[in-house]
Length: 576
Image 1 (tube, rainbow, N blue to C red):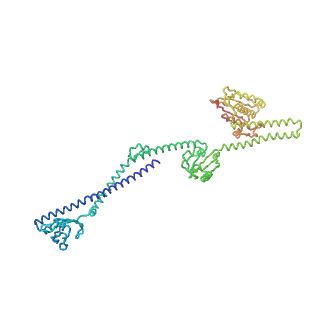
Image 2: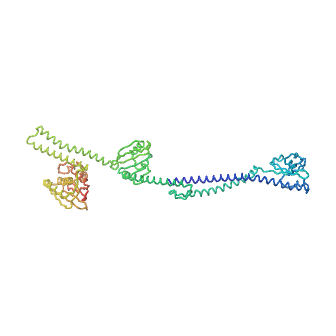
Image 3: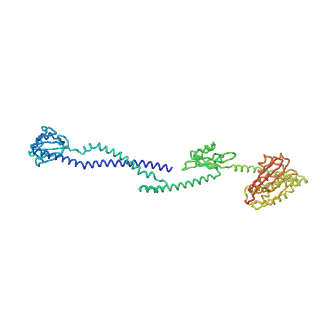
């Protein structure tokens, strides 16, 4: 853009300079021609006049000699004379005897004429005046002859005006020729003058070997180039930083002007809208996303109103925040932000469901406790049944305590509680210890628990949480097993730097419809599919999932209904 502007300016300068050079040259030539003509006329006119006088005097000398020596008849000589000079022969009394330009009889007496008087008195006389006969400016020269008569010669003198008038065609032709020559010379001169200017290196002006008069301008151009270079460098850096910032935003961002043309856009919004990875700069916003709600919001933003609404796309929910961009209280555009609130919405939904489930789960044992306590308080229980009712109250209280403890554990895991301290743990020893703790339950269920020890089973983790995780998984494998079933516990080193805890049972299994939900809080599979009726808080597997995530481990589950379940947890052998 800068280059095109400079070239346009140079083109205007080129035309202007050529025109000025031509005009100045034509003016100078014209003035020179006119002044030369005036000076020449001023200097030559007196010389021309003197030359005319000398010619008249020479002719007078010749005729005087002829007249005085009677070489021929005077009248015949004067009649036959071939000359531009007017010759008048005047008697001593002033009577005109002969005139080669007029009839003597019609001419008045010339005795009183100045040149005649001077000739009578001094022998010669001259004067310059307008002729009464011819009506022109005339030079008169009179000579007194031996017989006392006067011979007078005169010649019309061309005035300066007449000379100009006669020379005007030549002068005009000369000026036209000079104009043509000046035009060619001016063009060539202008081309020669401007050629170095057109060849200026605009990137480095001071390096040009140009006219000395242009050096200040070239220095200023160099300084301006440097300033522009620095400004462009700063703008590019700012643009690069801005682009890097908006492209690293997880939120989608679009900046538009008042005509809904896209000025900036980041990769996140293209991913959100599943749009092609092409250049949308300068394109209309609604060529990228065609949504009536967004269109109405954009119109409201252009009126200066901040807009917030929700936008659902591909099972995800986004909060759209559109804010006007103003300058001097005039809306120049809008900034549109796409914020993914899917997890937030899901968390809110989970919190609502969790609250409802907690209320329900707490209400059930509390209702039982309250009911049994009321019967005891009102002496509505036989003395022999008091231990039975007290046992039921104790059982429900234990269930309530267990539920509250599980809720507290989940809360701590959700908050990534910093009181959990990680340390080196031997999973083989922990598993062996927990198998011993659950031995009675296994015997009561007639389930055989098989554990294969592994000497290379050290990980970094929180002992309390890892014990809780293993206990819950083995307990569930026993609890949901079949009579005379089995639980196989293995610690495998199938992958380098990883340890896999595998717990496989021969229990009732999990239906394929329930399998994706078993780690959700308070989720219970359909009990009608199995004859096994076990009690629990419904939070065991949810706690397991949170403990796995807390240790950055990986959990997979495989299960078939009435065939058993296999849970694998992959721990890193490296320190977190």
